[in-house]
Image 1: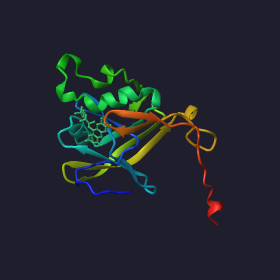
Image 2: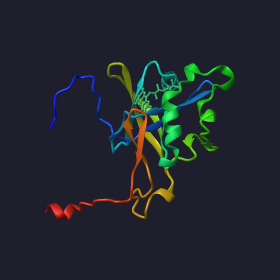
Image 3: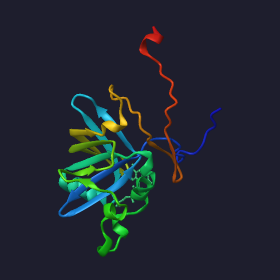
Image 4: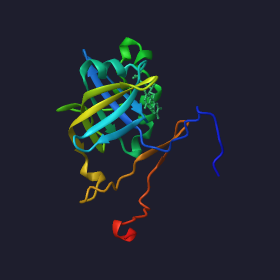
Length: 185
Ligand SMILES: Cc1cc2nc3c(=O)[nH]c(=O)nc-3n(C[C@H](O)[C@H](O)[C@H](O)COP(=O)(O)O)c2cc1C
């Protein structure tokens, strides 16, 4: 039974966490974003909400591009790490969050995390101020996926980390319920 709470109870998790990568003026970074969504299939658009105080924000705004990466359950710890460490707080000698969390990128795609099962390379097409966050609408220019995590029909068969809130994750299992369209006829 639902009971009314204050408007500040953002209890919308569980959900997946995207790792947003960006690079500008020789500085690169990665941050966790639970607030991300597909926005359009044609043209392909993907959106992420980034607080204006995040170190990642000026990198996305300045370069006009960002990466969206999804890591498997084996990497839940670095996923969380990107959301609790800020580039603002690192001293210049260790000021690279990716190295600190041992996150590697692909040589030919510096915004793609090597261990991701899915990656979108996006170009900012709109920036919408929503309140205390900015919605960066990205035109998806390239998608990469790791076939080891999908079956022949591109159904996800790997284990994904699902964020529950309060620094907690569970992983998806292969027990599934399938509701074929014809069963609704
Ligand atoms: C699970 C999780 C999800 C988060 N989702 C978002 C988000 O959608 N948008 C946002 O601006 N910050 C989000 N954060 C907070 C940022 O990831 C966090 O402030 C991070 O340290 C920012 O890094 P940066 O300052 O190096 O860019 C999230 C944090 C966690 C742990």
